[in-house]
Amino acid sequence: MDGLITEYMDGMRDLTEAELHSPGAGPLVRAIASRLAALHSLPLPEPEGCSSDNGDGGVEVALWVFMERMLTRIERMPHGLPPTISAEEIRGEVRRMRRSTDALALPIVHGHGDLKPSNVMGSADSTRVQFIDFELAGAHYRGYDLHKIFRTGLPATPASRANVELFLTVYRDATGGLVMRTEDLKGGASAGLATPSLPLPTLAELRAEAAASEPLTWLEAAVFFWFAMAEFPSQSAEWAPLALDRWSKYRATAHLVEKGGAAAVQLKEARGRAVEAEEEVVLAAVEE
Image 1 (cartoon, rainbow, N blue to C red):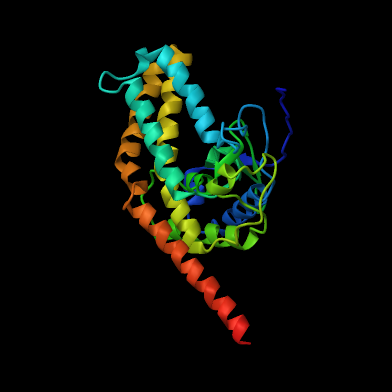
Image 2: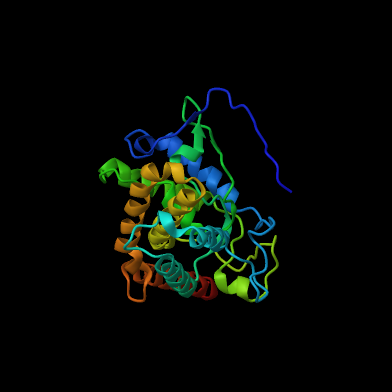
């Protein structure tokens, strides 16, 4: 069932990239991290067509469902694509990214799916936030939301890096919910349920998951703009440069999640260290 819920949020304003990356953004960063941890701790949703059965008894990641819908539309009206890029090539890249992310077994949570600063409203004192635009919400890779909220074209600064680290730290500390890995889904876990099979993530794991999600955010954005051009051809002149920009950024980062890529290696090492730390705790408890 389709519907629209509206609420007037007195004194709240849309956030900007610059705000999140600026010095003194600590209260705002903490508020976003805590709210995102609460969202990710909810049971996986079961909206029609988004987190449904993927054909092998598991739950489909919403990102791939939305990408398939957009690709189908682009293939019917490919005139908006530049001469050097075909719908077949785009579909091939989507398959490539899905294989790579499946191999990484990224944790899946009840995610927002489009968590950018303009989809977060903050109070005047920056202590309260509200997420908006849940059109793409569903079962998402945890790192996708973690990366996209801080994804920026702004130059990296010490304040920006400190804010990202604070965000991940507060998120990690606030995360008490249950998450689900890709292999759990393929094993037949039911939609609408979470599983207690995972311990709390380490900061290193969260950093790695966010890094591994970067190419996905760029690929989805490029596909979205080409889809929008197929839907609204009159806006093509405005959206075509944006699509090409996102596509070039995707192509520049896609290797990160391939076997031996920097993000893939970072994630493997982070998980290895987490296992070692857990084993040390167990061994210490036994020795006591």
